[in-house]
Length: 235
Image 1: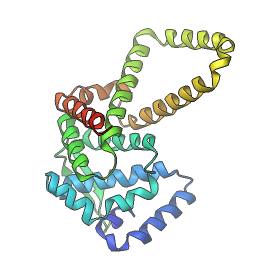
Image 2: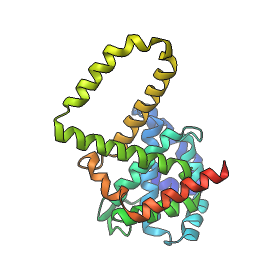
Image 3: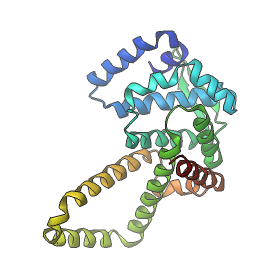
């Protein structure tokens, strides 16, 4: 359905209805469908669109990609965008792009965006294509993924004992923090949701720590800093 919607944009509204029906019948969430859609979109961008800002802009506009994705990714829900970066990570973690075409034939091709540098190149092109909010979502994902990788590395080195002790300390101290419970609970809930989504975005890797080569790519680090500066200036 996702590939048909991209290759036959004039039928897109029908395909969106089919995908909504699939979501309900399969007990999926909007986020699940968005991940499937975005992964398919990335594969087609990487294989068929010219590898330039103008090429990706034209593909996204001519295939109505934003219209296709928007019913499943709320514009105001920045957290849902974290999952999309996980799909780019999934794409760039493989040496091949494998998909089934409309005739049911499996197609394989070398992945021109494999690896950390490819991830950053694709992120830059997505920013130029203006498909979704890259400016704030990529820095947020990078920061949360780095925290998840650090936590995983720490847990592996000490067997997780400090985490258990910290949780016990927090539980014991909870009654004393009752006056500030509202704000603290809201912040904790937001942090928990972010952590959960980022870990979900890293599930294509052998462990969260395997994301570090991507995060430590100098090109990505420079791009993220530039995005932060742009956000600051726009504020």
